[in-house]
Length: 314
Image (cartoon, helix red, strand yellow):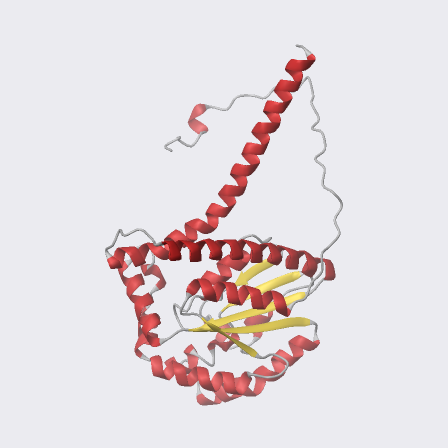
């Protein structure tokens, strides 16, 4: 083969690599698009409308995606800083059912290393856990140096669902409020960065989101009998929330309220604020170079039986 042919083949190979890299980047963006399509799917079904989005809506969606990807890039930068400095970060996400806590947690973790940033979503306590110190089961999920833990609901269950549904006594409720400020101050003294978010939605917005879940077979699993009862007790939850914030909004660990009727704005605002709470710097990195693969002339790759392969249905 001539030198010119070798050059042509090399250029074709480079073009193919560039095409594949571009395709991988687009596929990464599509992960977020898939979640957005799922978010909007029931809106269209309920409206029974196939009217295409207007220019203003398309512009808002374009801005949302652009900002989200930018903020997710900043989150990766934050992750590197947390690992580099061995920081310990705890973020609490609280709010009513269907307030959008899970949606923002998905967007935060979507492009991060699960070994660095993990989610703690604890189930109802077991019989054994009910006999422990109340905070004990949460302590085991706290981060070590170089880790971020996102609590999808937290020890504030006692001030919310447990209080409203009668799962704790008056004495346990009062003891919680006596203990939690000292508990959180102790965490902060130990070096933990503690950030607390309350996702706030209106009565009408929760009503709409519950209706969407009822009519969506892919989301009905999100509705439990407890969720239905929480809807009925809206005002009880409001009073419990007001008491909780009043008694646990301390200088060392303040509450931050996220207005969440607009899901997309809530996600961007929360991530933007989270980034501001942990100032970070760029980490200098050595350029990454792939090593040449070792080729062994004696190696023969053996074929696998066809019956072992997953059918290529798609």
